[in-house]
Length: 437
Image 1 (spheres, one colour):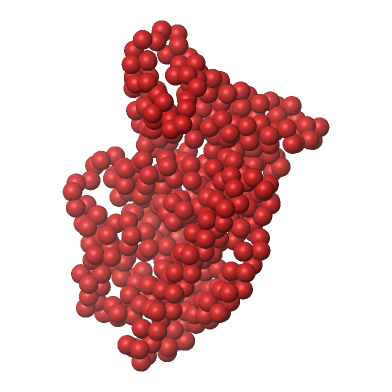
Image 2 (cartoon, rainbow, N blue to C red):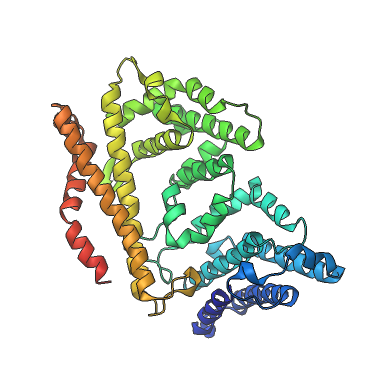
């Protein structure tokens, strides 16, 4: 925690103060002061910790039982100040692009501090639970969605061409930029995680289109475009179901009942998966409204248990070749994972190439060896996904004499296959590129 605050202060010392308004600089100075204040309170109450921390602390609750009321109130107020600061500086539009990395570093410091207090139960009785209750509330979940998205601003310091706001669970779990947020995410219940991941999919929509889903009225676009109307209505059904889950209004087995209730929608989604017409490859990325639909199908598959109901829902359905659906959906999922792991590898390689030899302390990476270890994690996962793709594609060609025809007859899959084959053939070049960074 101390090193993280030092790095934050170092970033502040590097900026040219003449370029910014006093209120902008004073905001960050105040944030740093409050971080230091809470750190000082921790040391005042518990003493300077030794390593390992869990062996150096006396029983925290015994300390608080003997503390005076003023000390308890100071600690609680300072802790809530951190939580409040995380909420109040969400609007990155008010922060100059050149100061964005300081905002990110502050959020990391604040989250690390709160996690330290939670992990070692350093808060006065009841405070940790109050903070956790806030994080699990709708307001707290909305903060999490916005804060993770605002952690990435194109063109800001330390961020390059492969820096993206999170849109999948893989990124939350494995992206170095979201490691502190992931700890918050892992402490949430599944229904709260589902709410976040659902909104990540929505964030990929154009903001004006997203409003159609958030509201309940029928828009002109919905009246004029039957297909769009269908998907908006389905997305609203899913949102309402997840909202009831969040409130605890759904009964046991509700996910299964929901999937059966929207069976017609799922069949339509499966048909899109088999023969997408509004999807394309642009800058080595899958794009188009049909990819948005496939994103929801992926969410239902991984989070709501659709993968256990494929035969029940699609078996015998007119117009659905279940084998072809599973083959193409698996291909889409592999391409999706490959795209994410490749972006994370290139983003991390760029990030470490422009930081100092000692590395960004706020990310707990202090040596060149540690940088290479992390880089190898991304590389291995990307390589393994390509190996899986090669094996699965070969298996499909061997078992299905029409597999090549099925892919070639759809422009999206034809181009996707060509992209993946090209990328696989250039993996060696990519390896040498990232090793040189």
